[in-house]
Length: 255
Ligand code: PMP
Image: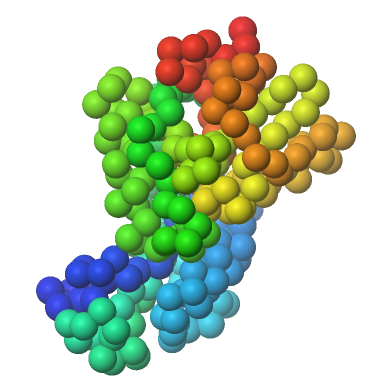
């Protein structure tokens, strides 16, 4: 499996990808909302005019087959579509030079094993999320993760598990690779998709499950101080699944 050093994605970040978990179930290994992840992959590709030379069902089956062929059950699937040797200009000389790959790996918990019960300690990042009229946060593109890298690297250097970035408007956006939920009284708040977030599949599941339980969930702007004053705070995402936050900038959340 070779990638050209001339690959457009290597020079300009022009890849789109997904991270999908597969879980061992009594019926065998199952992808968690695999088709919904792949729908987002096609939307990301559309934004960057990357023609994916396969249809969704083909990629879905290829993801399942990659897990099966590697004997994986509790695993992580990473379908990635990227501009290959399309010419050295930013505007691809050969727009059809598009490569598709699926990586698979065993994977369990993202944070420390205790994080599920005890929560993680996070900070508010000094790095802002990309502004909506710069690079679209709603597309899951390789280049976006330069922003995520800066957020998480700063957090780790300061001794935190991860960072929460504010948007260009100073309001809460998201973590480097996770969406943020705030529980205040009997209301659950989460920043809307217009807050420079990636609209998470896990975020959507959390919203649906909470509503099924009769809880009130609002997608609305969240201010920084609402984090500190929250009764509960949690992250959602494929990697972190649902992980509680214990402290933000050393302020303990709730009890
Ligand atoms: N935001 C960013 C920047 C992410 O990379 C991810 C992980 N894909 C998420 C949010 C959470 O999205 P999902 O629940 O679909 O994994």
